[in-house]
Image (cartoon, rainbow, N blue to C red; front, side, top):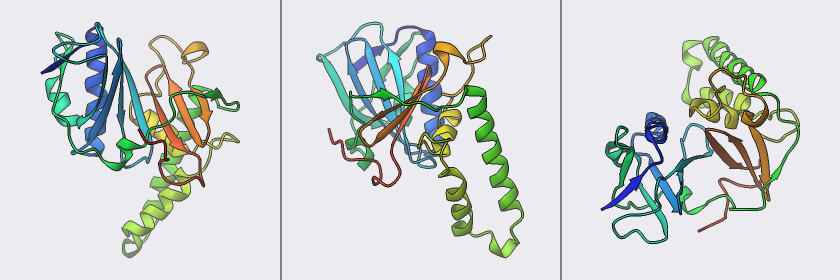
Amino acid sequence: MTVLHLADVGEAADLAAFLSRLLHYDRSAAVRLQGAGTALAVFGRPPSFEVLAVRAVRLAKPYENGLDVTLDVTVSAGELLETVDEAAATAVVPGAVTGPPWAGMMPPRGGWRPEPGLPAPDALRALVAAAVAEFRSRTGELAPGDRTRAELDRIGRDIWSRTVGDTGLPVRAVHAAQSLGFLRAPSGASGSGEDAPVLFSSGAWLRLRTPYGSVALRRAGTGALGISVR
């Protein structure tokens, strides 16, 4: 049994919240865990958004009970959530599962460079709110016979595939960041300065990083989730 000792109760609570949000969108969600030293990355893919979500977790110590220098395993998000003990700041790594296709296609580890043009956090949140309002308005105007899944999906694609200014980042990626709890203003602050989200690129990939987590995706026109297989 591999026990993860998280840095503090806050890290445990944040991990539990992230897993709960993933399970909200997919009850059978899996997560890929990659850990080295006292850093653990938890990858998930909420199907509604078509992005990879990444939550970085700080560990109090790097390993226990047979875990060697690194950890790399895909597990059930629900089973992992059940083992999180927030008071003790621990979690137990459950048994490995057969990973979904996305778990073998990770964004690159390095080569990330900042991209200009990302609006301020408040503007990003307002952009998402406007997109949600537009979706509700347009779907609400449909006649009952026209409210098909295909038509709802068409409207959703039209809205969420729009890009944020000239960045190439689709609005759905910002929506994902907000829905997963990554795009929020720190307590008592406006989310500016070092707490502001930053957009990075590496090859065909884009990554929106915030202090609470990241979302990564392939640029439009470069295929589905990517082909960096590890």
